[in-house]
Image 1: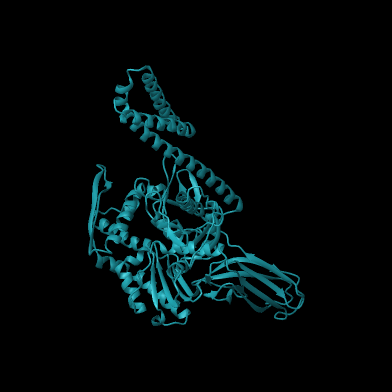
Image 2: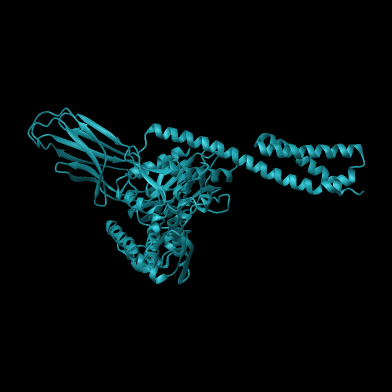
Length: 614
């Protein structure tokens, strides 16, 4: 199956992960993950602001996280699109090393140095980095279109916040797709197969399970999906941190959580130990000088050994939660575990032997390990991207709505119109009657059910109803969801035809003015970043040329110094060296490029002089 694409329709797929992110592209019919400058195919989803106000993203942010703990953001995905007073935000405020504050719209903001940042803005910094990685891979191309993945169980506000992050980063987000669906696309792409699969996606911050049917002709149909947007590797790490903190407190009567740097060191050590225990039976955790106490500032050290069995006992309930969600999803799909023909593992946490064993026992088969758990989602996003812009691509994706939709009726009851796991696009109508005598208007409250909670998506009022006893006026309410997940709702008086409607546009907690300003700031950063990158490249070349010329100087000087022409050439060469250094000091990139070319000509002349017989 060959895919053709041009510069104009180049689309990247981005897996915006809780712990790591990656970017992929379909090139000459082959989907591939693009490595960053360091050669890594994934980039830590971390952002930091230095004391000098410089922004750091990715590996460089992670490297300084311990010494700059209060100003380094991680796991922002767990906060995106959430309200300040939500349970997950309250949980995060107690565990992260940076400061989370309430935003002006009841949203979440992060305090870094002397500035407040919204969560979509932080995520945009990571997306912008992914965009730069792709553009460095395709020199001369400016890439603007992207498909970004989200957990299947993300609600409308979280999806909208992710779209806003893409917009702030300068990306045209042509589609948001679910992570397990993207993984299934990568798994089945280009293969003629008919198979019922389960995608078990346990990443750094979220868990999803999706049951999909892959049919002939490139049809991918999601049958059911469910998950938990606050269940992932971070929670496994937290159990290890709790174990370390409690042990240290028992030994020294000191709470390490009160020290931000100590907390960041614990987090780093917990993550490393967890990864190590996927391959060995024991992991040593050694953190010297973890904290200083008392008037004498006595340094205390933390040293413990964590065994795999201890880890498994600490996290067994988390693994059980994943299995329980799988059980419920199979019930929703009206399937038995034995009917699933393949189980695809996605996400870094699926490397844990205990997780693999639990999956194998529940589904009654060994899971497939034929896909890369960290890269498969990004690859699937790139495949979806090329399918959206290439009309010849024979790929059909039928996804579902992860949450039930309905209206709030009299007595604060949720009346469902579109059920969870309904294939989209879809529409549904239902007849309601007035609840009071002589009621001339009705308020339609559009609700979304998440687990046991009902979330208000939007509301509107249908007016102009005739006066009549309660129950006499019939109102037809119609819901529809398009392929982009946009929800539209209308209400009509069946007797008069009077109608009112609303298109439910979820809010990320940002105003359009705020988004515009953030886009402008992001663009300024991008210009500065490109200028800095250009200067650094020219500086690196200049330093190499200077070293090469100076290495040949003594030999050339000895050969040509006897002639006037030779002495003049030596003088000019010294002048070029001086001008190159001055351009570096003044950070004049254009002058530096010009002097580099002159220095390159000087180097060629020097090499010619020393290679000739004398």
